[in-house]
Length: 530
Ligand code: GAP
Image (cartoon, rainbow, N blue to C red; front, side):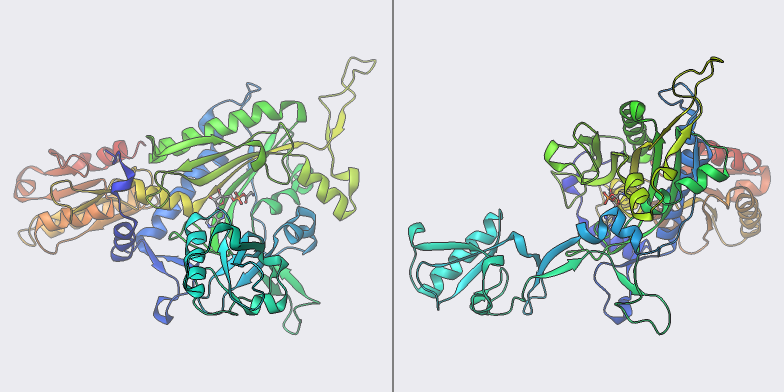
């Protein structure tokens, strides 16, 4: 069903289809666009909603689809919906204000932006007044380009021992003035390195100035969960182990937004923070890692395009401690092939976040959880209870990246007619669930089609679109639905008018069968796995 070799899929073709069929548009397109921002069109908005709804259903409404946790008990998850803007102290506590302050350099000529500490400069030894050429560390091509430019400037090929290399951050202002950026042609177009915070600042209050009233758009939804941990424990009947889930927008002023929606500046996350006793964190980590992987497979990313990758020790995030698990679920996108790109991270965040908020908020031990089922036994044989900071297992998924992976996986050009494309979406996420066609636009067929369309919209409209289309040949209408990823098409024809049967055509096999019109709803329900 899916293309075994992802490298045969062209990202340009997928992006063109996304635009042509109304899945994804460039944001602010009529004004020339805005880098790192994308809008979803009608089909994309519904696809995205279906993926979010599937996650919500399987995480919040029916956690882990009924699979018991490692403790043998049903998994408990409650939802929250927290603000995009919070007290700026939240981001000091989380480490985002400090941690996201990478020094950056802009090139005024090419408009490219670089991490200053990733840039090196080469020049001829002892030539303090001549040109320096800047390249990106560990990037062979960039280094070779800088060498070529230096040789050209010197009008000869320099030997390795005639060359000086230094870090860009060690250059004086005079040094910067004679340096040529990695992709530039002129000297002196690189700015001084400056702290660049990946969080978008904003101002609170109509008259507020940025310094006194600065707040931030959240760079992750997770912190909204941590700061409400106590509220949830105090106001609901949940007890550790349990999880809090939320979906929502996050914003990062990414230095190099790229690869379509993969790295955007505004994107949506689907995050679970699962609180458990520290002694049980390892088991819960394995549980969540494996269940999340099987979830993505079930939703249509089965096959070797999806992998689970355990992090190396040197990749551990600031909140992860030695021995705590971290892994990524990665998809082989056409632009990462033969490599993979992250779709979801599963991390044992230990008690880092709760402790940070306990300290920065001044709540201290009040943020600890009191577990009446643990601790030494009292004289009456009952546990005395234990007060502790729970550990947190965090499965954190990108909704937009999920949509992108699903779009790439579904994209299937017809091997016999490459201009014809099938979007082989899993029926659960397909934006259009079914289409109803009158074979011709007369003889009572449009009325019958309208009747069936109304019936299906009533029964399935909450799950996705039910289309109807009477324009052009039936073949063209099927092709339009194949390209939109509609799993089933019902057609009313001459025979329907005599025996009330219709044809149902399957997108993936193009096979047709005749069924009673009264069975159309049940047929669709079965295809949707209901
Ligand atoms: N709370 C943990 C956290 O935010 P992350 O790995 O930075 O971890 C989680 O982000 C997920 O969010 C990623 O796996 C990815 O799917 C998505 N994501 C992160 N940055 C993104 C970006 N710039 N554009 C689109 N999705 C992004």
